[in-house]
Image 1 (cartoon, rainbow, N blue to C red):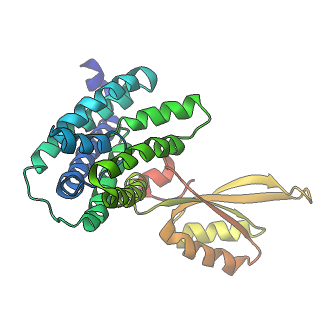
Image 2: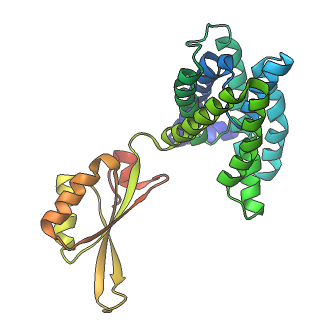
Image 3: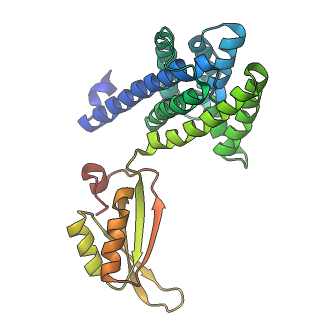
Length: 292
């Protein structure tokens, strides 16, 4: 109790934001599953996919199976990954089970498996992405993939693909191979929408610019684009000449404007861009501007 009162305003806001994302993400995932995917026997991967197949084969409600099958992974997450991750996953799983029970009472939006794969995949994937953004999970297979990534040569994506190969293949024997192919299509859409949920539509880029006109370009970026710029000190590998490298961040919608500004000042400037998984602190966090 003392710890709750000791939280700063910023920490409380961050906690409330995470809770909101977990609730919203769980609700969206349940809508995508219960109103689109589950009624049309189109499955997601992992424990969610196993729960959908169990619902069809054993006639046990999807939400109940999801909670039961995820329990071992929640405990595994507590001991192997961290209690915050496990608690967030437990809360998200419970909410998904509750929301699934609620939305299962409604009529499906469509009985076309192709349409359900598209729209169900979009809604479900967005919901899962929001939960992951908040530091939780909806599928126990994510825990297995994270642990395998830490202790083996295989990446999270490779482990997920290996597990889902058997799960999606099993759906072919249960629901028919047409539904298995719809499921594979839905799984692809879900994976893409998870990225949208985690990163947002305004995907950010890290930009590095090597130029002799660093003062003019930095001034133009700060004035015309309201971007903060950091100057890094570098050295040419071939000439040994001292260089100043401009470092900043921006959304993908601003990249073309940035290129026009740089080329208008220095046509020989060297520009590199890379995806930023997340941006924390600095002016970028407070005002969605670049780094000071």
